[in-house]
Length: 324
Ligand code: FES
Image (cartoon, rainbow, N blue to C red; front, side, top):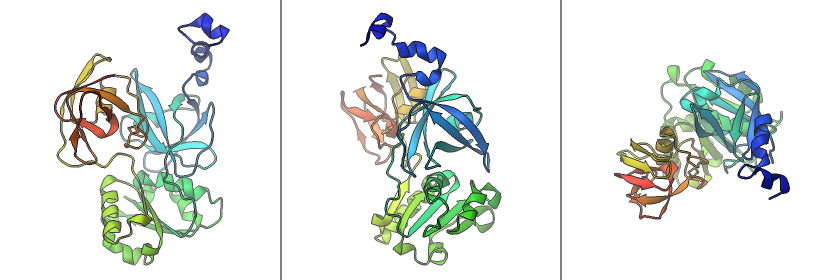
């Protein structure tokens, strides 16, 4: 610890610096540069981080915002290969807050993560729906005017509700729009008509959980799951959830919930560590002190005192307590 830091203990110089410029905080922060309205109640936020080591198109980033005194984290795909931008649809607590931000506002930021990326650029199929377009947009923009060998099927309620619609129609790749308000729900038995060579293409899929489950099943029964890449915004959940009262021991809070331990803790005002919120990064693990939890991906109930549990993919299986 340096001389200045010693003199300010228990605070660090950065803590005082934060009062002058919030971007100098010890955790990574970014200033909102612009907020660009998109279709269907969505908006693109262009961010300028205090520091940034770059990212790969298709990756996502954690964004933290303070709402009524509680820091809430969510993950969003990066939609531009050259700058930090996310596109958010105003659904849910954090996304609805993000679309109200203005240039100059400051958000918390995590480093980019994820392997939903396209390294070899061979013939591809993009299957996207709704805001599942966002990681695909990041990859498409990386072609910088060249026409990629991509067949892209995108589902939206109507033509007007296609996020990035005019830009997507100008890329020049084979872009198939499915508007379920007029075309009905897309079922995968239509795929042979829409994309006759889909079996030969490496496929990237992002969209609602139900569509992704159907895609995984279709590719699996076709023995093509090795050619499928899926990006989720939430972990796959099984039916028949569990519930219980969760005690956050150090935070001095309790919450009866059937939601994940992470969501319950945040709702109770507890400072919960988190990252991807999808069971990938292990940024949310906390020691279990008592009780058991249920893994929402597998349905398995598990837990011994002292076990580390991933709070983003675990619901309480009866009453339990956590060391947080
Ligand atoms: S937040 Fe990444 S595994 Fe839970």
